[in-house]
Image (tube, rainbow, N blue to C red):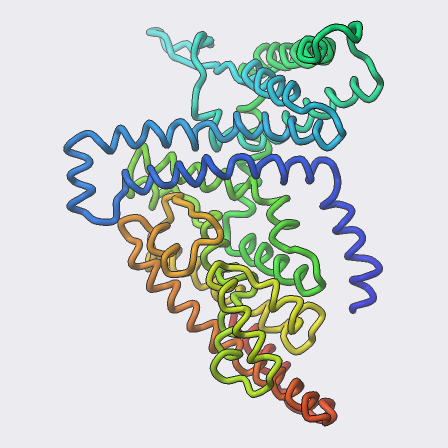
Length: 460
């Protein structure tokens, strides 16, 4: 299995995750993080967890004022994303990325002009073009996939011209900023002309925008495929499975499916803003990014807080005791690389089973709790992934934050229950090595652990 992973799977995964499309998308979308975090603060204020304070904000008009910031952050995510991806693509090719980012935004707006269908008095459908406005519903979550595609295309076209030195060249005496502007002139003309052609094509043939078409044909089906128990199971499994062989699972899987989760999260925010809790419960997405951050990778991938607790209070081997003290601080802030490569968990047949099982249990139970209405659908409030557990549960739940806080605490306790039998075996192996004994005598314990893993998987 290890040879197959190292020789076949690992090279293919690394090659795919390092492609220009995935790399520019992954690194470009990082620039949107400050918007989502700050926007979440104001979304939380407009949905304050204390009813008396929330009522005060509503009566005094502050709820609407807070929505102004939310609308200027979450509702512009797609527009910022197309800029960031085009910028990052060209930057990674070794050129100045700012002009490409600007062109990405311009191309997006050109292809975005909304087409509205209205009914006249005789009942005939009339196509009317709205001018002078930009519909923010398409610069937010509904435009994410279109933004990614267009950002990558603009970045590729811009780099193609510069790599072949197809540009207007000026004498060396001309200031650098003027030279840079003329450098972008030819690719800018091509990109904007192509964007205009795309607009004319979709307007004339389909009576809709390119962004609308991509949303209907690509984004909506993708969201439907991922927003279910099977999609969540596969997402969680791949994170832990890849980490088991030393591949950064959240980066690889998140780089591919992260934009879809972001779209789910942004749509929940929109639903909550427009229709409140009732609209969210009726049409909201269950599988959103906070599910992963707060119930699957909380305290680190594998929900390894159970292992840390064992190492701190129950381990007998010096190695696990010492490493437990070092790992506690990072674990509080959801970092567990000291465990992954220190014990290690990576390529460790004793600890890989609980590393895969625990997040599957906590993640799927959380999904089930929301599906059964034990927990409400999340409104889309996000926090930095380093926010400590319990605190993060309280924040993401808004007025129902206490429910998510208690549920998160329950999942952390469940982590301890799953991790302890396997951690004990690892501790005995380490202790045997420290005493100069043969750890292979623990084969019966390892076989017992495998049986426990099979039982957990069957129950799940």
